[in-house]
Length: 407
Image (cartoon, rainbow, N blue to C red; front, side, top):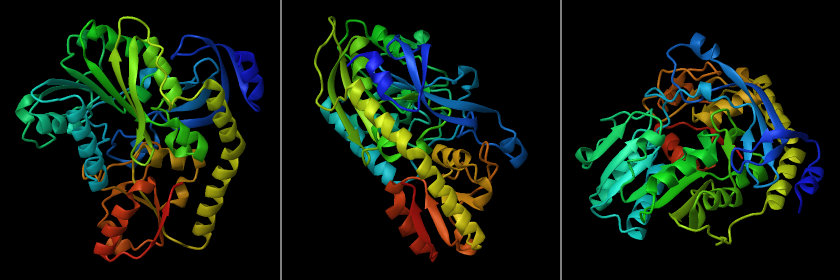
């Protein structure tokens, strides 16, 4: 299917003929979804409501590439990238997430025989996963991330882990080790081809496998998951667009799979000297991705209005509504709907967030214990995968309320 044919098939889009795709370098994107004036960061913790409400904003305008199937925010400006120690995205306070992380770490240790090896993690956040890999295989590790906080993670491998507070770039290409992983970082980078090419050049002719993990955009498009579209996420991948990127950059895709309730997409790849033509069965074509984009276009407005009506009805009925989860999904949910006033409180289990204020939203983040006294009528859960965990906590605290997963 030709590029022109794909563009013609996408209804209610604006063609941008001169817009360059940062994933394959072709020109011509189809603009299909817009949200104006959203906070340029969702996880920077602020100390007061005034600063939170005055936080800088930008626009999200998603463009689809007919050539490779990649989706990007055409309005993204890297000048707003301000990942620092106060960027609080640590998820390891959740038993549900910890179980997944430990199982994944053990899987990688077994698959790649990571025992007494040197591991590099690009975008390591606070270092939880890197410490896990080093614990399980008696490995040494180097983590590179501007939001890293040395000493935050308590681990038996602490003395074998070095955290570098910096953005990964060519200057870190000497940090290769025996294995490279990168989790939930590539979606924050717009020049994706340039970034993956740096990783490939750093490996050279060494037999160093890489594993990347990112959100799966197939779910976002199929379910109309608008809460997973926000400013920091400037790059959106499906299995096909991700695999094509890695092949273009000199890798062979050795595995491609979904995890964590099919929310995450993982790619295993190895460097090759000659271009690989190995196609993984999970890969989708640009035409298939275009069909999902059209589905999103056709259904998203009804979904947004449905949530607005639901929140408005609850407010008029005098019901107390709380959001569980104060991260990026919460910010996107409230700012996209423009219904911040319909929510009274936001709670989170991460103690490093308690008492802080949410960018663009201005709500103070409360601990779950707050609900014992508040006794809300309903709690909107930003990620359905945590519902069982949350219900168990509520039962223990004696909080009787309706849990409404965001889906």
